[in-house]
Length: 208
Image 1 (cartoon, helix red, strand yellow):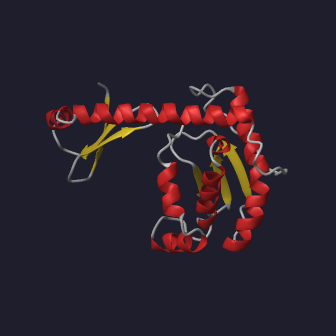
Image 2 (cartoon, rainbow, N blue to C red):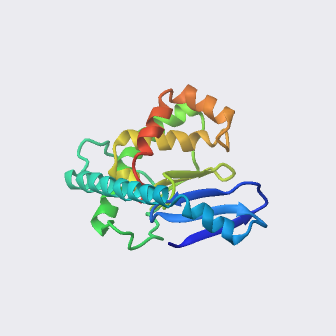
Image 3 (tube, helix red, strand yellow):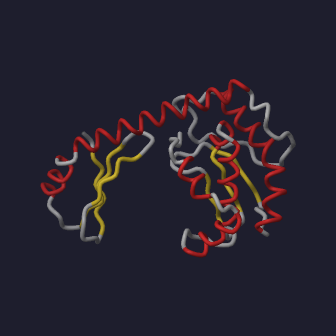
């Protein structure tokens, strides 16, 4: 069992099993003995394996959904053009992704975004300077408030449209509030009252 140990000036140890590969990471105090870390991990082997199985199951279910969505062509989604950058394939060769799926995901996002942007930028009162698509390993989207740039996970193009809408609203809201503190949450409550339920449902799927 391979464990990555990160030492920080903290008082307690923390264990994480991280997607997409179920890697094990321990964050530990600077001077804690290695033997203590080994014992800490050893006492939690059953939990680690359970978490890894959960990640595998989520990945399987997510990929099955994506293949189903790719197969039906997303005929019910909005059709329009959008001036966005081509998806960045920094993760070329990601397990489960095919060239056809990537292309369909990109086209799906391009069809949906114009109407979504027109609707939500009016409500939120902020517009991005640029939107790009890419395969992301650990998040559904990101925003750089200083530049107004938003990045969307290409995977959203092969998922239910409501998830893309939620992520877009989330990132647009960051143009007002950079973190996830009370101001951000208050704005999200105003813009999209059911956002917490959407977040919970979206997080049942694996980020591939």
